Amino acid sequence: MAQTYDAVKKDLQHKMEVSIEHARKEFSGLRTGRASTALLDSVVVDAYGAKMPLNQCASVSVPEPRLLSVSVWDKGLAKSVEKAIREANLGLNPMADGTLIRVPIPALTTERRTELTKIAHKYAENARIAIRNVRRDGNEALKKMEKDHVISQDEHKKYNDEVQKMTDQYIAKVDDALKNKEGEITQV
Image (cartoon, rainbow, N blue to C red; front, side, top):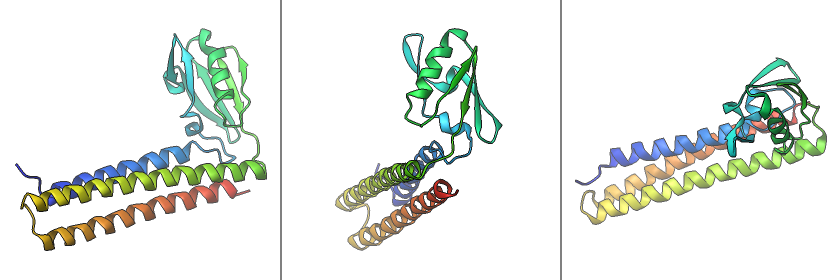
């Protein structure tokens, strides 16, 4: 059975939304000078002979605005968790105290803010590329639908324009998210 345009459109919207959410998640991991549990989401720990996300071997809390507290569930993993946080390239220096690891959030320097802004731009560009790839897949699906005589040539052009408008809207959402993150990073 041939695919309908509505099904293609719904699929494209879903995939573009996933790209936006992925970018927002990456943005949340960028340090802005305030403590946030999302800051450690990207940390991967060597535990039990495998790599696992930090949130699967410890709980993270924010007891103070400039301090993260990581409570490791297995005392044997404390050193691995501390090492993983230190090596995560987040500019953090954790201090272990048994199964509790304190992670003070230092004030951002100007050069670190510039570096974080560049990383945010890279994340945004990756999201834009993902959205454009979704657009390409949609355009290919429309070509196939026209070739299979499911839609006419005029409908193909009209739907192509709709897919482009949708792409522009989602790229604008990425740009807005980037602008917000840049504001958080540069805020003193």
